[in-house]
Image 1 (tube, one colour):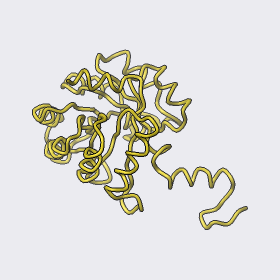
Image 2 (image 1 turned 180 degrees about the vertical axis):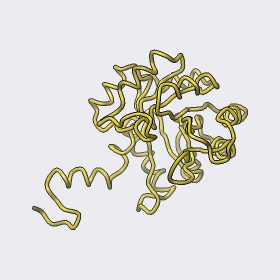
Image 3 (image 1 turned 90 degrees about the vertical axis):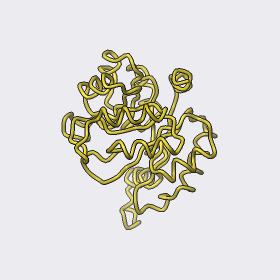
Image 4 (image 1 turned 90 degrees about the horizontal axis):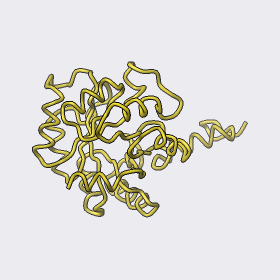
Length: 231
């Protein structure tokens, strides 16, 4: 079953449907509708966060669903403990994404405990990493997919302008498990470049599902200030 699930994502686009705390779209039904919209556009899978959002999205699609739970705002906060991971698995998410960096986990427990807990729940693990060494370690611990999600965000690797294609290529050359390109993929051309670099699939979030950022990009391009006045 896991092999068949992953084959549905090979060479395809996964769309991340998430909103930040306090934003108008930070609502499970809004994210459910966002997921339906990107599915209509051809998304092969969805990545989303939060137990309520995941349950709402799971109820309306059978596409591969990558789930996570953001708890906190700094350090390890993407599905930070085994308890969080099991709760995400219980929503029906097919794949549980978690922070697999070398940083200390908030409960002091090892990464292997979270990976084992997800597998015991019958789900796959996507390890979000920042470096090649972290990806190798996570795969060695049993992670089923490795994503470049955290490249440039932990201080261990410079942040690239777009996706970290160098890390994608390095991981693809080192690992037998699928490598997922995620992070700062802002154009179709960058998505294609990530696949060409060896990515198994590509996750795009902000450039598709975050209208606040998209509006800011366009506003800056046409010279509109935050107050709405044109230069």
